[in-house]
Image 1 (spheres, helix red, strand yellow):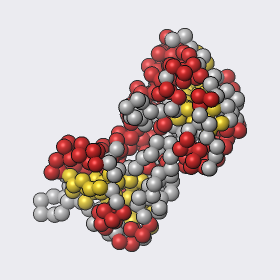
Image 2 (cartoon, rainbow, N blue to C red; image 1 turned 120 degrees about the horizontal axis):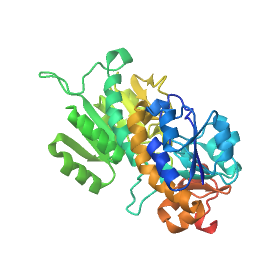
Image 3 (cartoon, helix red, strand yellow; image 1 turned 180 degrees about the vertical axis):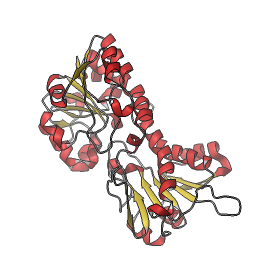
Image 4 (spheres, rainbow, N blue to C red; image 1 turned 60 degrees about the vertical axis):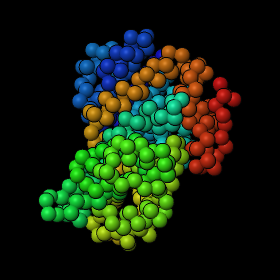
Length: 370
């Protein structure tokens, strides 16, 4: 199979879909890999490393899109890339279609067979291709939140850990999944007072067993969320329903009840966000203030640490990518229900139920099409 990987064009996105080691794996399996020149530079991988690994370098992205059977990326295609869509192309990347009707329509119109990292689900219900970026985003959320609590950025001017004789910051985490657990780990490590909310009692028990008296666990309800954020210095939104639009747990009315200079980091923004007051920002212009609360809503948070993120992501994606390249998408899906869960669009049909529901479109079971 002809495999392609182009340079990401999203604002301040320095990750890359394939490392030189990934290229070696695809080439060793008998596939041909085409890399755009400079695609890996932002993650610290040189063109010469890709050539040594067996890739063919091309000067521009359009030639790669035109010539490959499967395109491997990190982030969703932007409108500038939609003209490169073609029938039967396998697109293997993050898509977040529930929050992006324009992209959904473009993939359907182009009859692209799109495999979304964020919906590929293992038999134990884990999300192996989302997990590494969730780990990074969760840890980054505290790092970024701590920065924007600084006075120069509009924050309260409070240190998360405090010092002897001063109060610690109150960190509230909405959602105890992979993002929330990793945010909790860093916030506890920095010495903050941490409250974490989730609707799953079993998950709260697991968090309580792990962190003990270092955290407060609460069942996520409107009243508990409202009471918690009133006293919060930093709120982390880390809610996820695979493939679906994120529920708005963080209400706009809460802002007037919160401290001036408090910070809200909406990690769920790439799925639409869990805050009613959230809208996507970029690394160039990451924050805005509404009713005195600083909002950080960058849609590609892990892009800030591309070396770590690229290696973590591709460690997970290469396994499934090789299966698709070896057997073809259809046969790979017949052999593996796990891979089938990642397919969001196929031959102009929506094959992910949550995405279809988000847009009010017709859903088609992939089994009927392959």
